[in-house]
Length: 97
Image 1 (tube, rainbow, N blue to C red):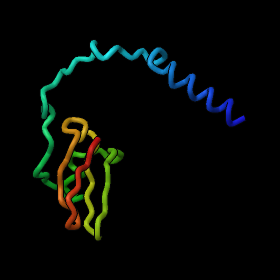
Image 2: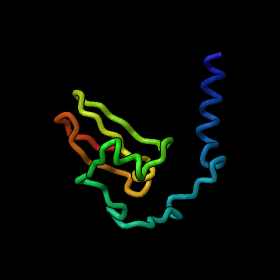
Image 3: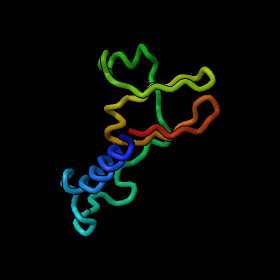
């Protein structure tokens, strides 16, 4: 049975570029220049009370808690910036989406 599983995995790996419609490397194009989507390097925060005025009640966030210091990063905002560089609980963090 393990040999059959290995054969199946090998076939899937070999077939993946065809199945996924992947293009040859010569057809890959870069659309944005380096740093074309700006990171947030000096994030600003709102209190929970203030955030209720501009965030949806069910808005997705990425939350972290380091040494009792908590942050919530809005996924819709991250969709526009993709990276937030921050310091939380004395540790440098990069939040990505």
